[in-house]
Length: 248
Figure 1 (cartoon, helix red, strand yellow):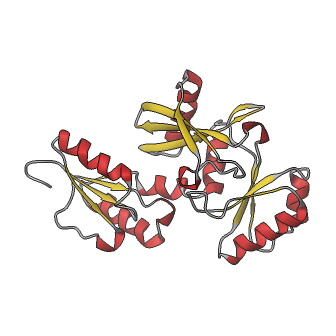
Figure 2 (cartoon, helix red, strand yellow; figure 1 turned 180 degrees about the vertical axis):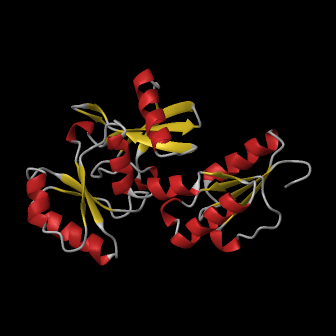
Figure 3 (cartoon, helix red, strand yellow; figure 1 turned 135 degrees about the vertical axis):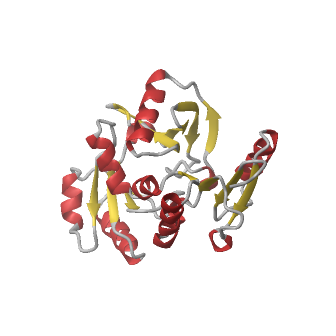
């Protein structure tokens, strides 16, 4: 353990990203040492007091093993814990866990390689759906499909990439807008609206979405806190869309 200042090690594939500059600045104000490393640069010298995983969808099985080793063999605080990272990174399992806990989510089914697209289309009453890789983030491989031919093509492309697919209900009433709610522990820090650029339905900022701060209502705060705790996360950005059934 560090002798003078607490040491936080951050593992990320994007150490040059804006947020890590802010992280360094705020850590310095709090007299906390920070080391930001790519996975390939990781070593255990010096051993940190807190290990912060920010590898997202790029968290490989090998990295999960590393997180588990650190979590189980030392007094380092691992944020988020390995079980939570594994669960949150799986769109199917996380959706099922949330639904079981009574957290409202859009309808979703798995479509592993070989699934009959016609059966999937029928399950959603031939309505528009969103096709995604079962694991992934940042909008990669996410497609909005509106007819059986597009569904067949989207599933084939997902399978060709080596991934099982999930097919999710498209919330048309959200109009390509969602709300990202930021949660740390029991504290809900704030919320921002993300609006997709014209011609795009994905609300990822790096894809051109615009953002603005929005009022954090008690309903939004409770929903985001419930989702975070259900998945066992310490830190989370919870995405909420407003559907006809209410926020999901």
